[in-house]
Length: 224
Image 1 (cartoon, rainbow, N blue to C red):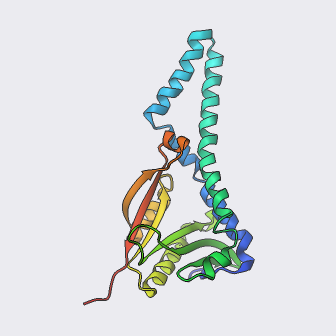
Image 2: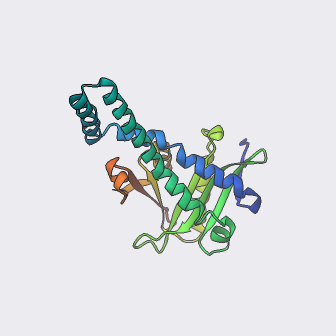
Image 3: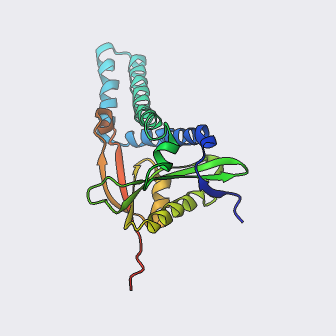
């Protein structure tokens, strides 16, 4: 028997829900940073930063410090991509969760609660993709690190799919980043299929090849 249950969002969940979302997004910084370090053009740049001071001043220490500054800048830039997204979201749809998600047709927000504590979240909105009039979008999926591996994310996902099915939707759409590998594995196990990917329109995002992946789940019909 599970030690959690899924319910609708309540005003008392506000601070916890926002905190879960922010922490869940920011934890992907390291993976995105590691990905950036696999890119050939990044290493070409780092090599150049190392060699130029060495050739100009014959100082190995200055070269090492220069590389360290580049790596620090790469880390901070990668983290900035996530921080800016969190900042925008917390001041947009998650500024007033109840008003945005529970007082509008086609929207909803659920939490997973365990022993009186909110440990997971997921939200539904109408899809704004072209041709998505009968599609629902999965958003704000997050599960506390201490409660992962217990099937909470799958339960939240099923709750949203059931909501979409009852509304007569044909599909559920979602976006996730290339660094969220665990999320990709979960969605693919649930029956979602990768539809497309794109690099975000941001100078630094392009430099580190920051990709957003779009997944789709087709809701089975009961037609004979």
